[in-house]
Every structure is written in structure tokens, then in C-alpha cells.
Length: 222
Length: 262
Image (tube, each protein chain N blue to C red):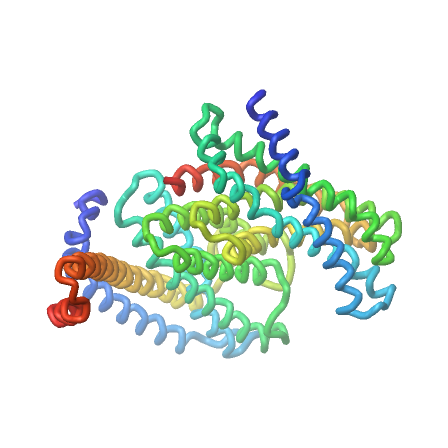
């Protein structure tokens, strides 16, 4: 347990200090949202209708952007080999790393959501709904994305290949995240049904992600 | 002859060389019977002649999921049993599965135009089959991104097993979200809702398409084994050229001699 908490603390510290790049994701999120009014026009009514979708898409891309650092930096300096050889089960170590990554890179996105919602002319209820769905859904993005990150580090290929592999897996999360936010804002569906499916997706990926990532690390690293 | 005896590629090649003509003949005969039966099947009272697209569309859609299932079993073979031919099977199946999925999407959209009035609808089943198609393409990109086949095989196996979670979503999407695509009518509780005059050609076509897949898959596996042999021969030759270059120092002469010998 102490090993895992030490791993989480270490990862968060590395991510937040100089060269960590956790807050790059928030900056990217802000840039994507600011770009949208240039693409669709400064129509406030239209922006508030598209708002949840824009915020979800921005959060998805931002969390994908920072994901390839999840194992790559550790692989470069050799600490990933120590983690795979240590007595802690690799699955738990992967889960701890993903949790640390979510705390450092995913949580700031949710904190930034109210400000960005203001830019997109969303009211209080809508902003709250989007923030809540992001809180429930971004762990699923991180934990499924971790599989792609593990594959990328074993193949020495990052970037575009990882995006191609991870984006199809994240489509259900996107569907139910936006559906739940829209249900809270305009109806006619109830908020509960898509929101609980979103939570279920997060829980499933919480189980699948560490095992798949650990399997690909075990088989891929020579 | 058990599965482990086939671990020897030479034995596998010999067996499939004997099997393939029979499989190909059976496929052609069944496809001919199925196509004839579907051509002579009666028109639907509501859909008219367009119902005949079903005899192509439904087997393609079945196969698109069946092939991923085959690849998942092959991936288990790679990761768990370390069967030497499992990754060959998984790699050979991916482009075939992608083709079946693409044909299912294409025929579905051609069928949707007269029936639903649109080529494409963001309906649950259509969307999840499109995701399946994208996953096939991603898997093929993964196979092509790495030059070492055994390393690519293990990575692709993990991704295939994760993607297998999408299969139940596709199967039950029509029951969960009640949207445009019709619910399951052939395989369901309480028997099929299709009339016999439609059901029999459909089943014949499904068996014919499955045989077609088996034939194509075995042929593709043979090609993949031969391709790997050619590759290792080329690498052996390259290392021989490199060593002889060190020995004699005349690069041009030895290279042309090796190429001539090959």
C-alpha cells in the first residue's frame, strides 16, 4: 500500500513540476474551446446549444494529448523497468499511475469547466451538469487511454498511432457523457439513465484498463 | 491431428493445401445455391424487391462480428497458449473482417436509402458497426506500424481482446436503444419471426459466407507464412551479403551475385 501511495505521490509531483506538462492539457482545452466560436460563429444561442458537446470534445482531446507521457517518460529514464520488476503487482501499479495521471491532468480540466462554460454562454445548471458528467466520465478516458499508452511504449511509437487506437474505444463515453449533459439541460430524457451508464463505463474501464495495460507491458517489454 | 500438431507451419501448409480446393468448391456451390434461392425468393409485401439486399447484408454483418470473435480466440492463443500460428491467424483475419464490415455498412446504406429515405443515420447499431470498422482499421495500422511480427502480435492481441468488449454492445444495441434499425428477428427467444421462404435462403447464404471466410482465411494464413519465410530468407541473405562484403571488400560484385543466385 505504501509503495502504491508513494508511486501516486511521485507521479503527481513529477507531473506538476517543471517539465511535467500536466497543465498543458488545460491550456489545450482552453485553446480548443476558444477556437470553436471562430469555427461556428459568435452566435451565443448556438454556442450555448453546442456547449456541452464542445466541452466534452475538448476534454477528450486534452486528456488524449497528455496520455502518451503516462509511461513514456518512465520508460526513457528506466523507472518503468523497476516498476515492472518490483514486488507490487503490475496491475495495481498501472492503476496507481493512471489514478495519479487523472488527479494531475484530468481534475484540472473539470475545475476549468465552469470558466469555459461562461465563455460558451452556459447557465449554472448546464455548467454543473457538464462538470458532473466530466467528473464521472474522464476516469474512463484515462483508464482506456492507458491501454493505448502501454501499447505505444512497447512499440516505441507514440502520437498518431495511439490516437487511432484509443479514439474508437472512447466513443461510448463521449456518447453517454454528452447525452447525460443534454438530458439535464433540455430533456426529455431523465438525467439518471445516461449518467449511470456513464458511471458504469468508468467502472468497467477501471477494471479492464489496468489489466490490459499490465498485460501489454509484461509481454511487450523485453 | 490436434491443434498443437498444426504448430509446425510445414504440416499446416500441407494440410491446408489438401483442404483448400474442397473448401473453395463447397463455397462456390453453396453461394450459387444461395444466390439462386435469394433471386427466386418472393418479394416482400411492404419492401418489394429491395428485401433481397437482406440476403447479402445480413451474412456480411454476421461475419463482421464472427471474424472479430475468431481474432479474439487467436489472440488468446497468442497470449495464453503461445501457439505459433495464432498470431498468423489473427493477422490474416483482420483485413478480411474489415472487408466484411465495410460491405455490411455499404449494403446497409444502399438498403436504407429506399426504406428509411437516408443513406446514413446515427442510429445505435449503425454507429457501433462503424466503430467496429474503425477498430479493424486501427488494428491493421498497428500490425503495419511495427516491423517485428512477434512484438506486433502481442500488442495486437491485447487490443483485440479489449475491442471484443464492443461485440456485445453491437449485438444488443438494437434491443437497448429502440431506434431505426429493426430488432433481431432470426436468432431470438421464441423462434424466428422470418417467413420460411426468406429464412432458408438467408441461412444458406450465411453458411456460404462463413465457408467463404474460412477459405479466404486459410489462404491468407498460407500467404502470411510464406511471406514470413521470404522475409527471413531475405534477412539471411542480407546478413550473408554484409559478411561477404567485410571479407572481400567488393560490394557491387557480391550483391549482384546474391541477387543472381536468388
